[in-house]
Image (cartoon, rainbow, N blue to C red; front, top):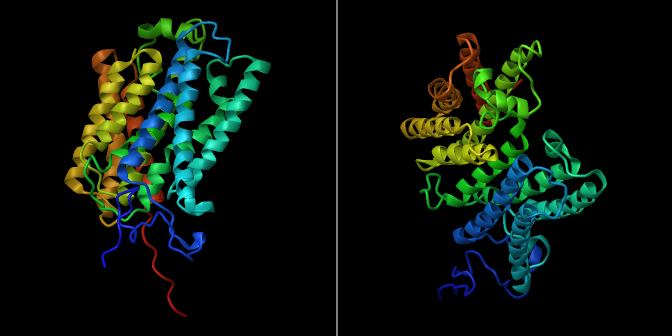
Length: 381
């Protein structure tokens, strides 16, 4: 007799049972997996949350005298969290109604996500109290506030739930773009979140390798004066720029190398990741540095072409190492070209060439950490 079909998910009960067979203890049942459209609901609600975060960040950068917790931008942010948390709670509650108890009711990949909901709730309550006592933070202090870092931790665990679920799924290693969309969006949102909390070192927000005079008003607005008035400022700006570009290389390249450990991603993944994250970050300052966003898209396209041509994977270690080295070089090189064309490249060759070289070393180092060379078993004595 063929196995019955589950009316809730439309799957065969024998392959992923939702209602537990009589007499079978809940702890022995495999944890349920969400279907692709359910994973997509998770990332779309999480997109609401992240858009709210960036809108709130834009308000802090562009709306003067923002001295209250209760703002429209906070409302978008916290309502996005409420919607995402409510969806995850509903998933668990539905499984409990179907007879699952404890961890057996939590979908695969969502255990840490539920912990993230709790951490966010604690951080949100603490944030309201913090603002009432200390006021509204500004600039870098807003990104290092303890309650905001609790929010960051909670959101990070929530966003990566679809990625954790897909990592352990028995799925094809070369999915199409549509099938891979939940993972693509989860990675994009995660990269955007990390980039948001390190925006004080972002070349999509801060003028880097650009003559001071071209952005004198920008630097003055952010508390810096003319290099002629403050000796050593030019070198400080160079140091900040190098740090920003190398950190950006790490942020953009690491998720791609992680994906390549598990999948052969669809063409367009890297272009989408780089372009979307760069645009979200640049929008914090109204895309004043839009050529940098164009450079990120160009570097992403180069990365997609390299992956399509060489098919890097742990089984093709040489190709994996080559992509790891060339992807940050493409990102940094495209950035310097965009600066030279749209503005003026103020750095001498030693600085921009050396920064690109450091970027390639960062990529290689990441590849060695993510996919180390297999070790031989010790020789028998």
